[in-house]
Image (tube, rainbow, N blue to C red; front, top):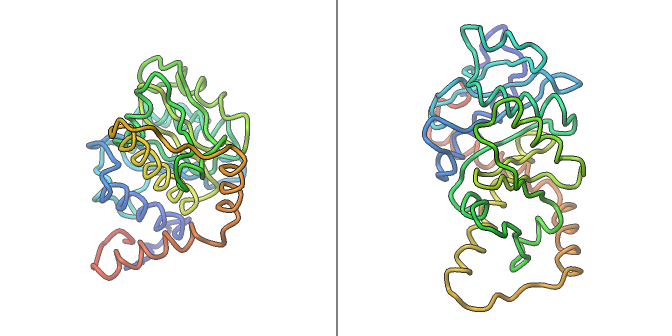
Length: 249
């Protein structure tokens, strides 16, 4: 475990990403061999690590991750070329949204159900939902697969640095953050919040929606809660290590 191949750079970041891939699959937030996670490794964010083309999340190891240059279209012609939609969406995000150091795009069930509703807002009906109060954008202009034109349109909506979740209408969810731990933690809790909301709607009962001032106060308290994201990922890696997983190879 944590075997560091010689000449492999950004090893700690690779291990964190590999753990995020494994747990995304374990929680059934992946979709076949589609969906992508990326992490910037240079100052302006245009070089980034991401999963190889159409490799299942549950098999990805730290050494499997490929390096992509968002400014080099020839990347798509190389032997380790990423999926074209991954190049489009993640290349556009890392090129145009510098504060998006990490980007996780999945079609997780409950987030995608929310994205399929005519009104895709997430009301603050519990603590997890409060986490995202006024902290997401809703993309209502889905135009097909996430090639470069579509990704530029999506990236242009991340103008408010406070908003780090995009509910991609008719598509899925895109979560950004400063590193793998922060972004995975945000993805995890967003899917949990969506599940609570969708299941609450299924009861057909009236929702107990919190006042905006309470939701905002709760969101701020959660944002300043010490090291929850780092400890969350550390515990997941510890479980993988205990199980003898090869994710860190």
